[in-house]
Amino acid sequence: MLRAEGIVKTYRGSATPVPVLSGVDVSAEAGALTVIAGASGSGKSTLLNVLGLLEDADAGTVWYGDVPVSTLSRRDKSRYRGRSVGFVFQAFLLLPSLTAVDNVLLAGRYVGRARTDGRRRALMLLEQFGVAQRAAHYPRELSGGEQQRVAFCRALFNDPPLLLADEPTGNLDDVNGALILQALRERAQAGGAVVVVTHRPDVIAGADAVYALEHGRLRRR
Image 1 (cartoon, rainbow, N blue to C red):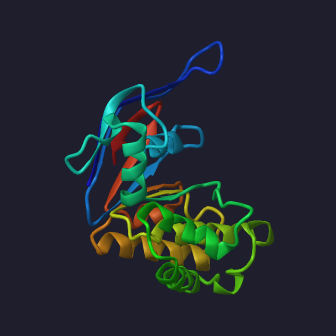
Image 2: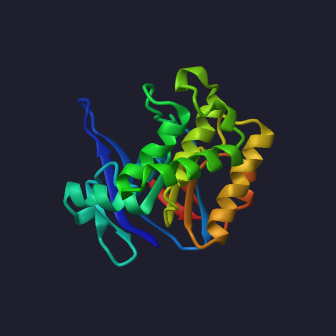
Image 3: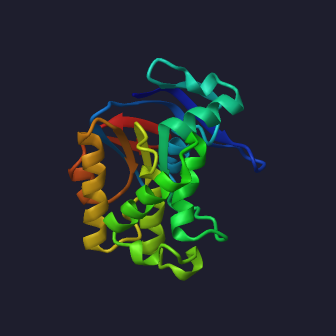
């Protein structure tokens, strides 16, 4: 489902360029939960952003199936991302002006989903992850763990074939963390390709494939 070869990324916002990714190769198969582990600041989130077409690499190519999506125009990248990728951001990125349910429904705009049908699904997902009672609340009225679960619902809304998650259990207690982890495993078992950036041993232990990112390079454990 997902393949990347020779990914290079250097940040040049300061006087001294900072190399982040140095020729990274990675793949994620449909039906598998793939984990990328590494220390804070190792470039895990940057790699996930490149794989999700949110950032451009300086070199290398990302494929979704047989399509070299990293070479597409910005509009086509957006189209592929909207239809193919569910993204769980570490910082949640919920829109403060929208309620929890409307933040979930936002994902439907990318695929032209009917709002009535979409609302039923959004509420079902919020119920599944224990935040249905917060559906009409705004992000500022939610705890960090509640925001994390709403963001996870948004990522699942379109049933994307590829799910990319950046520390999806990082703000959750053990009970809700286990709920999200089980959902990730079920997503993979249903045939989706799931890539998770994490340092949590319980997520790593449940993975089908584990990579470690160190000094800009990725190695298979």
